[in-house]
Image (cartoon, rainbow, N blue to C red; front, side):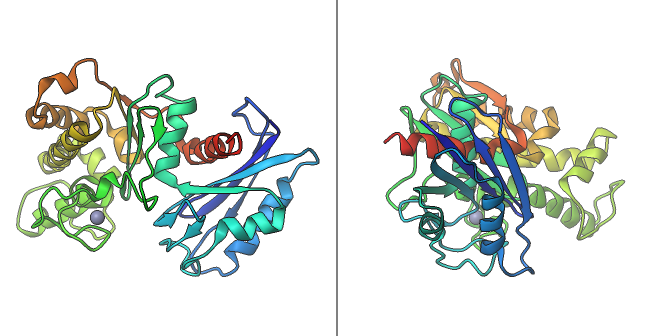
Length: 311
Ligand SMILES: [Zn+2]
């Protein structure tokens, strides 16, 4: 096994890092902006990879990117922050340029893969990873394999329908888990309740964040507390569905909103117990926080490239 170059394409930055075999500490790393209004994202990505490209042999490049994308052809179908990448054959372009295989998958799947290989889920065979931030994403390891699906679009856990008449989701459909329990969904709910006259220490504000709602909840604001109770309630319904499908031994929560702790997870666990159709699913089920933080995407890209280049 030789070196691996891993790439994490984030909302504001692209990170690139080089790893030795058996190590998750990068030898070298670079970051460049991925911002929408700036053209030439691909060219900047190539430059960032060239800047870290080692003298030693590189086995492969692994990439974690927001989707939707096709991991089997290495094509970005569309990605919200980089409008110029429509049906963009990222893997084949980079493979031609650098002369090594390039493997690509979506960022939430890659974070789940990283937590399984290097983080909180080591040693488990059935793992469900859920990231809660501006959206809700998922990654699933089932019977010791990364679940990708026929189109490579498996494990979109945030877009499971909880209530078809529910709030509008970021994806344009209604009532998905994400439309109830993501950070913006929590803030939107608070704004709506204030607009219909509910008392709160918070002011109606289109830029309100879940972080601000959490601060108010910690100060005892009852609307803010109820916003997290509601988010936890619906998250529990979503996860009860995931248990029925995947029957995991561990649930791992990542993303900024999951940092609020009991505020979300107490109502979540109550709802999960109430909505799981058989209590045996909960026996010895571990519910824990992600261990890898901001490095999860990068380390998932590393794990994908290592596993794929070993055949
Ligand atoms: Zn959705």
